[in-house]
Length: 269
Image (cartoon, rainbow, N blue to C red; front, side):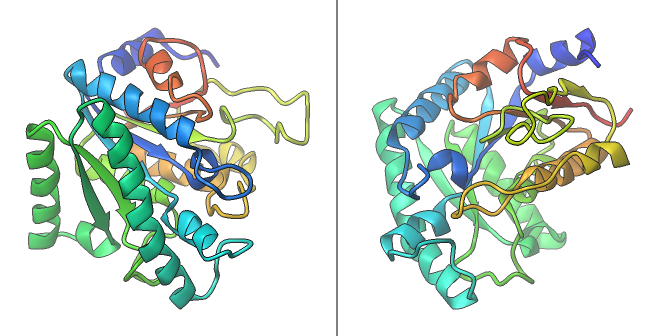
């Protein structure tokens, strides 16, 4: 199904945009950080802010970067090891982001969240106010799950879900997921060369969920299944979502200009 023109126009007009980048996109296969990709991502997001858009970046990678520094061969499983890797990796990851964004004179801010920050009351209100104030100052909030203190019960199981929660909290116009697969397909394109891209999803159905599955690198968590779950959250809360190839962050500009790439998920009418 082709993307309706009215949906394309809404994406072109999106002002508040959440961008999520995953570990498998941020890193090479060996787990080391992809500096060229972060450089291009920094340029693209700064350009959007210079155009007058409000941008929030949700980033994975802290545990992956920390695990590499600790010479783990894959993502740690034990909670204590994950927390240690996150503490080491988060500091390194934020320093890398700041170095690149500084080149483009773009101010950044770090926000680490848990599920408790979204549950309502004063804590949720404070979280929202912090984001809005940073955006008003022209800063780029860089968000991650607070893995240094979270357990599976307290934290988000995947940053796809975190990004959908942030987009919902801030009433964003659009959530863009940068992935290692360029779109949703009717079957796994890594296994089936005849798999067809699904450019537009009007509503999440059982069939949509059935074609998702699988994970990225040994240092990542999410697969297409969590991206469909994120799309369901966005659908119910009036946020458009797109999945695009993360290997070239310039694709963000392409989809905002109406180019037919990736997969666009519409909102509930």
